[in-house]
Image (cartoon, rainbow over all chains, first blue to last red; front, side, top):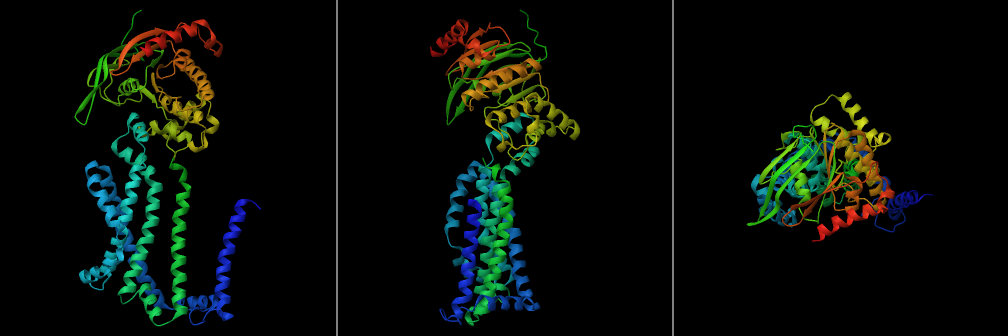
Length: 251
Length: 258
């Protein structure tokens, strides 16, 4: 077996072992079955949930909020970040401030968002954007830094216009870092939305997770955890696939 | 010897001065540089690091504005980059990693909106000239340092400018590659007969390649001397061990040292 195959087999083995233990441990009374229902039962619950329109409507609410917050936070954060990084003065003033704010856990601001916006769609979006925008701005700073001076000089020496330079040098130079921004943004964004729903909401996946946790409904709770995990990993890997494709652009 | 300044490919610099100012301090980079390069000649500029030879080249390329003085290329003033008149090859090949070798060579043409088929033909011709047509579809990270620099030369030549400026193009390469790239460049030059202005800090490299070597002194950059290289062409590696080569090298070395 090639070293690469060995790694893949080892990885699969770990995942299978975790799932196997999950299935077996409650069945042989190693853990309380009320606290950890076997994997097969959780999967059956998930399938059952996915067959109800009600669950889909909750899921739709969460995905809708996530998407709207994402579509606001990423372009806004990218544009703000690029504008700040492009001006020396703005860089010196704003960069440290963005770093400061980034280091504060965003969850502590959630009650303030509820006081400001009530328990509403707007509140979820606002908190999602707030959770996300700083990481996008910081990645955008890195994106501007990744544009190489000599690449710009080549464009200039061949008479590129401002627009051509943006389209043919800035954009492709920044693509790998911007893809990373999208990936990280989604993690922060999804976390923010789910948290906001768990804390105070009337609908959504986070709302269900919160309620199931309080009601000791472990099968449903774990089914939701599996679903959120799968969705997050899928989105992350989808972006990472393109990131790897242009990995050699960063030299 | 008469120099027709209107001649295609001739370069003329008169009384060029450049002052660099930053943080309230000013520093004279270039001091009263005047020079003439005849069409089709291979001329090197040597000097200690920081003598302003690269700055001078960037001004010839229209990338930097001198504080005062005039530059004419092919009889016309140079005040901004004009890639159809002047091609530039930089120290780092500076290829775009997201473009194939061919797309990199096509880049100057595509900026001008040249027709796709024409662009492709010209790029392939230029790649053939540097011996890399087989690597047209490869990306820069798949090419060696020497190959990257050859693609960069092809990019400089693709619009067939009469003048090619080269800023220490082989400085980042290992010794062996540098020597073979020198021969490669001479072969290309012999075929195209461009005016080449070649900045280097390698004295042997300058002598080996050039018709003339211009010697600069540092801080502020002044033109010290102009040395005619009377070695016969075509040049070959054996010439590097001739007494004449050593004599020329000594002559340049003494001036740079002082």
